[in-house]
Length: 317
Image (cartoon, rainbow, N blue to C red; front, side, top):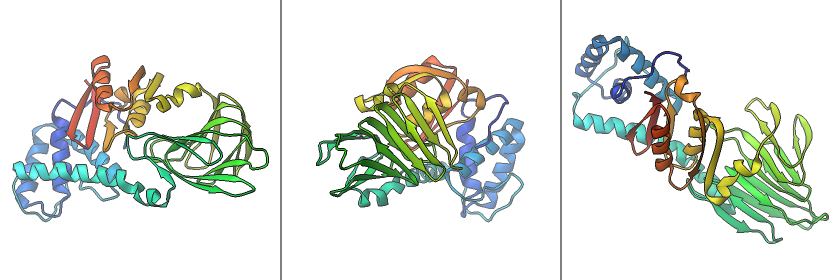
């Protein structure tokens, strides 16, 4: 979605714009719908801007062409309650389908979690693996090595030492080899980058770009272009999800919302840059993301709008 520096959308306008984005690009939109849409646009210049922002949002959700205000499409029914409910269903369905894309990974996995769930498993060698939300792993143990394939999500590993059987985690072209340690590996998921975080000990990370040795407190992230960025962070706070908590310290609201979205079905979208840049510090219960959103709305100058059970829009107020 594009970033905007202008004033945020007025209350209620996001819902209207969402209706017209879905309605005008729908295959059953009528000429009467098109005329009503043009009248809605003509009533206020803010309607144009709102439509553009929500059109970009829809494009982010689905790889489809979205109508511009001047486009004309073939259509069929009026603007009524049934149509409005249909739009909400379309928005919800798009988000739901995106969340359900992990079905194949789960079918291939030895262990997995669903959205909003965390779980601890103990492997045959005594290694404990804590799976974060929507995660899936395969285990491949032989006499010579212990190899884990991270299919999706994030997992934290408390590795039982065995120098004769090295412990390795593979994730999308990245291999993290434990040297007697506690560490997490996260796959890239579109919202958060691929990462290795070391809480204790050392981890040797290998990618096509080379190798790097990480120590306690080191975090290595890898963007979609393959670039590796190493930093020092509070790994215990970053992985507080193991204790059912999400900990943030001066992080942009944009990043906080990305994290919250991992623990709920649907999509959270921040509409304007002023809101996205707000700093957030706090501890939230990952099992109640609705409460987290209520706290953010109460503590920050933002409005939280729920278009349906599957779509949340956050904007400045």
